[in-house]
Amino acid sequence: MHDAVKLYVPGRPEIKVVAIGGGHGLSTMLRGLKRYTKDITAIVTVADDGGGSGMLREELGILPPGDIRNCILALANTEPTLEQLLNYRFTEGSLAGQSFGNLFLAAMNGISGSFDEAVHRMGDVLAITGRVLPVTDENVHLEAEFVNGSTVLGESKIFYAKKVNDCRIREVRLVPERPRALPESLEAIAQADLILLGPGSLYTSIIPNLLVEGVAEAIAASPALKIMVMNIMTQDGESEGYTGADHVRALIQHGAPGIVDVVIANNAELPESTLLPYRQEGAGPLVLDREAVEALGVEVREYPLALAGRYVRHDTDALASAVMEVYRHRKLR
Image 1 (cartoon, one colour):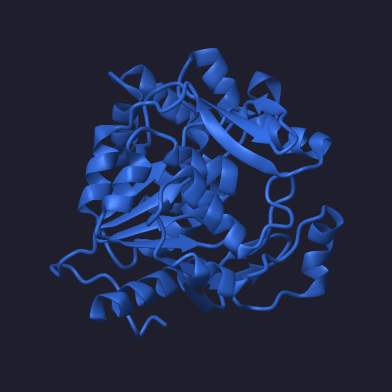
Image 2 (cartoon, rainbow, N blue to C red; image 1 turned 60 degrees about the vertical axis):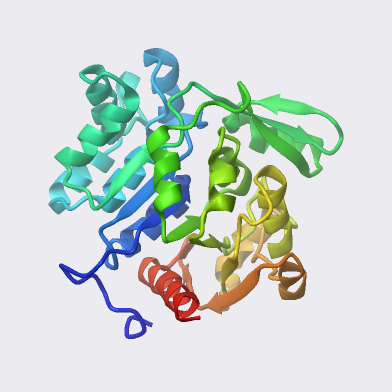
């Protein structure tokens, strides 16, 4: 597919890309996208409260750095040793499990006027392609409500609460509700040629961004092509049993009509040996119910995108190539 869309050429007008989400899925996609354009804005959720990010959030009062760090590293143009250093996790003492990159961003926050300034300065130090923005600079938490009416507060607690409740998530919301969006995030969305949602955890990485004041409305109003990158697998403790149409409906429910134009999905088959651990958890390959998705007014495009190993992941280069091919075809129309 690389022949269909030329890779980045200095001096050529840039495609303005906005990628919205969090977690490993967003950073995986960013690594491939920077081969096609240098005008990339990653808008990242700040609702995480678990792991090393949660520890720093609680102890230092900063926004969670983990997802933002991953995106900065994905866009960085650094020596392998520096990337290895920033990804290093301490194994002993009070810092056990903590990433050096998280500490780097926390230190940068200490010498900056705001968290978003710290993110910008870290990006400068690592000479990143494009920029990374927190979707909001407010201290927000994620609350989930299940179909049985029970609720749980805290992104890191949703997985366990869903297991206990044994029912679907009805909706998620931010506490406090409708926090102010970073102005640069809304500006980037308004100026974008291409807006990408996902891949990543539906309720804890993608949707929290849509709950920030003005973000969903800005996406829906944008003339940009809006693509949702569908997850390859359903997620244990979050989206078991969900089809492709379920994912799109959840985005529309929490966002706005017109928030997605095209879905890109994987059609590569996966070996049963890879799928077995997922099936034991109640997860599995996401079923793409094409007709139901198209009934929502969303086009469906399929490509072989899966990398099967210990975990199923998107192939970075194949995903970026598919995204740019869909963009080119839509533009030619």
